[in-house]
Image (cartoon, rainbow, N blue to C red):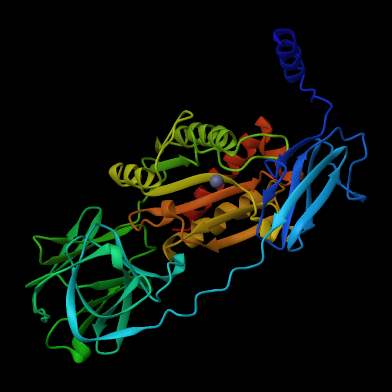
Length: 441
Ligand SMILES: [Zn+2]
């Protein structure tokens, strides 16, 4: 046993792969995958020919391969080399069409039960459906329900939805609030708008050409809602909203920084510890690749004069919200999460590859474009800048993007992103993207 381990270790040191077919995904034989498609991901000696059910598999010069296959309902048998894989696909379950919207006779007041309670545009927890995140103890006028959601009336013609588990019922009567005063302050690094009310009410703050604030359930305005526009001065560079003293709605809008030196940048190496992330064709773990690129980027940015913070600098497990909190605690101007991609079974035939950048709040989109531009310049395919509701980028207080440098599961990408020299190039590209964004301010 010991001799075998040593032999294996020497092979690894020489960079020679053990000459045997390895299937990285599906993780085992006899699995259930309820999708029209899936793929076989793994590695084999590139000099050998590999077939899956007599279809030739393209094996990359690194040994990695990704081979999509269709799944029929029932049992599917695949012969790969001398291995046999059985994959079962169940017929789609009937969707429950019994759920109907119920409207109550009398509206009831519910309070948000926790910080960061999402208000949804429709009764589905799809990410882009989020209208606003409210603090704890904000009263909501609930007028009905649909499945796991309560229907909230915001104004005469405005509605939103909140998860049943996110609110608690109150005995308070439904009442309307009053706006008492408005205070504006300019501080060295931010503008502060304070709306004094006699109680907390729901509001929605959204980005337009600046920020649009709509405060609901307030007296004296058409439809009981007060609308306010905050002009931007230059590009938006982080903002936040919160209640102070249980009745003052505060909106802080950061001024954009004037130079690259001294920027607070939080780098977030995706996954870590018990969360491995995606597995590459060669068996590499995404968490390790993410950390390697992040540490290189850290050095480059620190040399350029930025204050760089890391959500992890080793193989530890860090919660998603802890990553965001750390960024907020460091008063970050920019938050960059580093990941490498994989695809769900259903997209096995999509042929997607390359780099992509995700953002949630529009203020971060332009930065995403600039970073992607540079990653494409070093040879990654353009897999687009996309809006997606990932927890780590759902933070208004800084610019926040999630960079997928490449695909762990795509052999061409995998060979690049696991290569130290390429990782350095990728880190430099991300830095260049940041600098280009900054130079256009
Ligand atoms: Zn990831």
